[in-house]
Image (cartoon, rainbow, N blue to C red):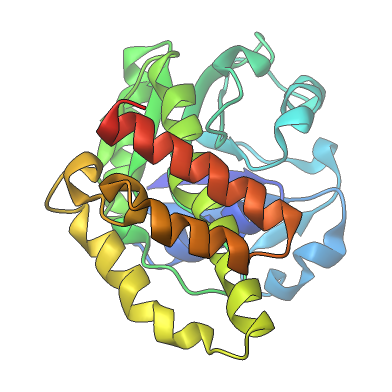
Length: 253
């Protein structure tokens, strides 16, 4: 049984706790957060604390806090030479204080606290300095039913950056589309099959081959009509930027 202490109470920590709780071979024996209110809901299931000096011995300590807080929290942990990892996609492994055995356990997925998630679909990117630490983290990931990947310090930030494009930026475009449909009295739900099909398509073909639309065809009349329809400068700027990017990719201009 691998014993784990969770540090932090954000979306990643909450989903990770629920996923670990559903397994037999790994166990969260304690959950720390500086504010108990955020984890008090689970006090009948796990030992919760807001005091770092009360942390118990464990095989693994997983930091699930904002990137800016990783260094300070790891430095304040009242022990040394134990395996401490963070879950960030962009923060360096070396943000963890050198008194610990350091690693990264990065679940590459979008997490919303109130939205259920099948953790078996989450790829886990692992970075460590010691082979035995990689072996333990790989075991944790596989016990969760996840596909695990060994990544280096260059690959993980690149994956995180790419994830921002396919997730955060894409969701912002959904928001723009929602605003446009609302403004003109159309239902955003009508677009949902298109959203699903677009995401489905890139499972089988490259994004380059999957691209369609007026910018790829260089359909100037349609583009002009679209721009005329947009009365929001912010939306217009995004449309022009995306159109230009697609044109350069597919038409060389």
